[in-house]
Image (cartoon, rainbow, N blue to C red; front, side, top):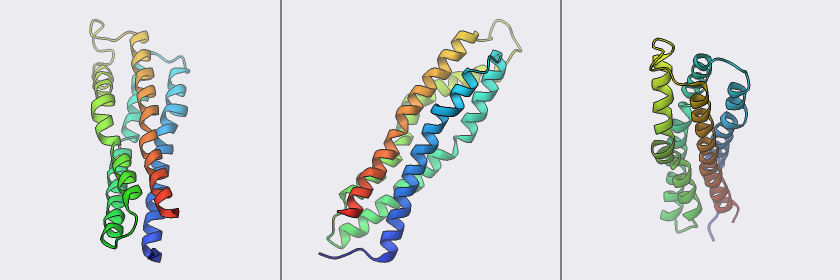
Length: 165
């Protein structure tokens, strides 16, 4: 049985930590940021601006997920080429990067509606979304985002398993 080089172990460990950090950052939006928005008693316009601020800060998460996923796959390929156990790293990369299609399919529709509502603001009373509708959409976003955090977390777990086995 061949052992991992120090550089491979360092890269794999960094990838695992990165996947876990991505999961934590994603979860923190649902666990801390969104409840703060929903519990302030703010007007619809203010809630939308607060959500949009969270949304813009969260745009870095998918970029990090792709970079980390690709790095997991690179470690996987190196291990495969050396005839060593590689599947946990490949699965870790796929799960971490799966945050992107999950976002596009299940989170972006809500993002678009909220972004459109925020763009309209209070400019037109007819096009303005009700407070209850905005709260419902923000809750929906929170719930989908909370589910999304488990993808990179599972990716970290599979890669960690592959590293220690």
